[in-house]
Length: 219
Image: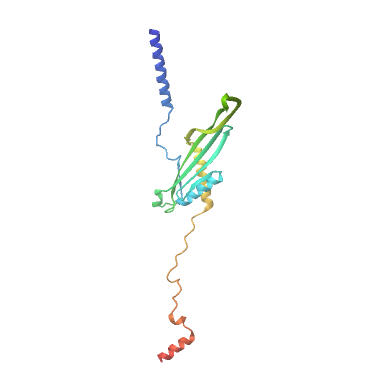
C-alpha cells in the first residue's frame, strides 16, 4: 500500500513539474520594445504607404487593400509537398508627432510612423479515405474494391512574425522606394484676381455701326 501511495505521489509531482516547465517556456507580452513593428520616415503618410505598396508588389505580394493610410498584402509559399504557408503583411501609416516640431532632418508635415505586422499561417494536407458501396435491389448493399480520398488543406498553425531581420529588410526596401518616387507634387497655383481677364465691357461687344448711332443720339 505504501508503495502505491509513493507511486501516485511521484506521478503527481511529475505532472506538476511538466506544467511548470510549459509555463516557464511561454513568453508573455512585455510591451517593452517598439522598434520591431514600427519605423519612422521623413515623408508624408501618403508617400510612406505608396512606397510600402510598391515594396510589396516588387516582392510578389498580392496587394489586397491600399489607401493613403494603410496597405495590406499576402504571399503564398510551399516549403514542402504537403505543407502550404501564407504570409499576410499589414502596414498602417500614421502621422508622427515630430511633424509639429520640424528639425534639420524633418520638415513640418513630413514625419510618418509605419506600423508593420506580419502573420504567418501554416496549412497541412488532410487526407480522408472513402469506401464505395452499391445497393442492388433485393440483394442489399455490395461493397466494391474501390476507394477514393478527399484531400483538403487545413490550417494547423498561425503566428505573428517577430524576426527583427524580416522587418529591417522591409523597412530598407520601403526607404528605397521613398527615394525613387521623390517628393509630393506641388499643387497648381491659385488664379489671382489680377490674372483673370477683364469682363467684357458693354461698348466692346457692340458693332461699330451701333456705336456710331449711340454717339449721334448723344450729340
